[in-house]
Length: 266
Ligand SMILES: Cc1cc2nc3c(=O)[nH]c(=O)nc-3n(C[C@H](O)[C@H](O)[C@H](O)COP(=O)(O)OP(=O)(O)OC[C@H]3O[C@@H](n4cnc5c(N)ncnc54)[C@H](O)[C@@H]3O)c2cc1C
Image (cartoon, rainbow, N blue to C red; front, side, top):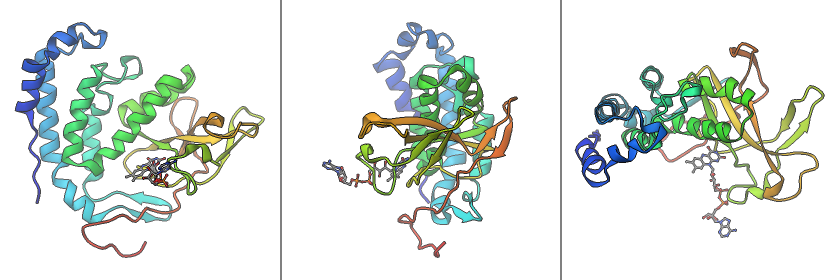
């Protein structure tokens, strides 16, 4: 079985001796808490988690794959436990803003984390990785109300996130997006369409999944200029931020990928 060894010595050499990250961090608002001893402790713990928890699941997870049962996706053995440890460790919020529950550390700390966890187990890292894409999108483009509702549980890792761009007729050329968004009387939008290849689009790791979806309003111009972004939660949040009614978004199939062992048809 392949074994991952975190390159901590190389990383610390680059951080401290080649690029002077400690000096750089002192110039950042987010660097106030990134003191050398904190950075060292975080990298060491991230290396341990990657080596001891994530790496051992890489091959077994690849061989087992995900299963689709009655619309629910079941992740491979060990993924849920590893994800819970990831959440308990506060890893999802490492570089996220403190005002939404993150630790507010510099973005480069998040990159060191992603480098180690992604190399130890890329398949696992896709789940929290796509969530970070959704978090960044909501942070940059969401209303304050949307940030309050979605960013806190996403930052904690209790909820997961996705990016829903690709459709059967449209990949690289997103100007071909057909998914329709129709305004409703209550201020919400009704979306109709099919997305494919959505990484972590459905799974059993989190209590809710927040899809960031590309769609087109009825009067939208053709091409990429006519695309809008919508938040489509698997479960509609209640007023107090809990998980409410099931939304009408479903996983129709799992993508069949190359696997080290052939899997039976779904
Ligand atoms: C592992 C994986 C995870 C993914 N996760 C997601 C996800 O989370 N969310 C999501 O929305 N999508 C996801 N995708 C889909 C991904 O975004 C698309 O595969 C990608 O946009 C390319 O689209 P396509 O596969 O339809 O290829 P095509 O668009 O058909 O492209 C095929 C080839 O043609 C080339 N090509 C296309 N147009 C032109 C052009 N005009 N000129 C010259 N060359 C061109 C491309 O470079 C490529 O080599 C994922 C894909 C993979 C493989």
